[in-house]
Amino acid sequence: MKTHLSVAAAGILLLAGVGIASAETIIIKPEQETVIREYVKKKPLVSLDLPGVELNLGSKLPDTVELHRIDVPDVRYQYVVVGGRTYLVDPDTHEIVQEIEQ
Image 1 (cartoon, rainbow, N blue to C red):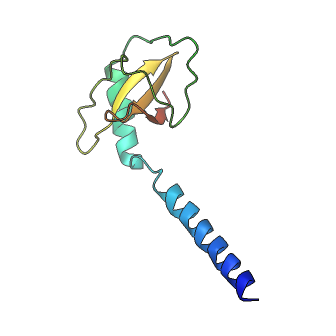
Image 2 (cartoon, one colour; image 1 turned 135 degrees about the vertical axis):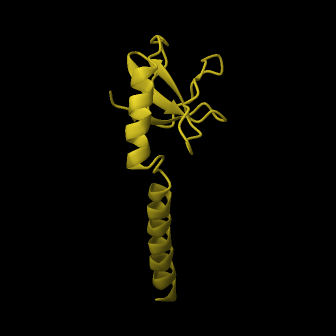
């Protein structure tokens, strides 16, 4: 019975960890997203094509892709337009952290 309790407790802790990880996926505050959306609309970029590269949240862009700064307070992410879609990218890892709907 002790083993079952330990397994159950481990399962609960694992689920709690998943909840914590999900909470960390919040990238920007809703009010910041509005400001960022307006910024990228005013500063449009030429859309890049990256044949053979599938882009999703967490996808890493090639280091050769030039990222562009967003001059908005408290936003460390940069942006790029690929295939007509605007993405926020972590400049340290080149990972896509959010798509900005236009």
